Amino acid sequence: MLYMEDFLDKFEIKIGDFILITGNLIKFIKKAKKIDKEFNLNLLIDSILDKIGNSGTLALQTFNWRFCSGETYDILNTKSETGSLGNIALKRDDFKRTRHPIYSFAVAGKYQNELISLRNKGAFDANSPFDFMYKHNAKMIIIGLPLQNSFTFVHYVEEMYKVSYRYNKTFTSYYIDDKGNKELVKYDMHVRDIENKVLTFIEPLESIFIENNVMKVSLFDGIEIKKIDLYLAYNIIKKDILENNGNNLYKIE
Image (cartoon, rainbow, N blue to C red):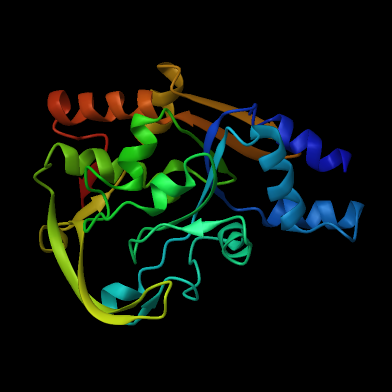
């Protein structure tokens, strides 16, 4: 399908790439279905996997925050709250889900086994998928969304440098693993200090990333596509925390 191929060309991905993708695909899906009624997101995922090959890795966000409010998490059946692409991937045999009940990813390709073997208790720990992506030079592609609504990676860097406006919080609920075993477990997340009215505010990173060649922005049929080098992004965020008190990362309500 030419429309889909032209869309994917904007990603500038190649054999061996490690790619994390998220975004709002509604506009793209509507147009693609007008052109070809047979279009579906499995075709898009297949095309991405073809482009990165067996030596590449594709990760899709499958975040779900209901564990935080005490709901049971089922690694095989709890749906993603971060878009249809992740939910499609969770139904496929070539994808497996990482283990954290709040911030998980559906992954396929070269690093699948390493990623699903991670046992991070904290969402943004030094042994989390975010850390793995940073250390393995992953690129993040964001479709049709601002960083403010999509760039969770920033919280990993914030935890690494123990920012004062966030703290570690433990959540307890039931967890059903891939073997069907149900257990009461505890998992952590580095959360913002709500009592002190801390708000995530990373809009300034949009221009900072572009100016420092960390992010490339392109347009396809009115859809904005961002591509971010996570290794370089880490260093920019780290610098802001250490030299600017993280003032480009949060604000007080």
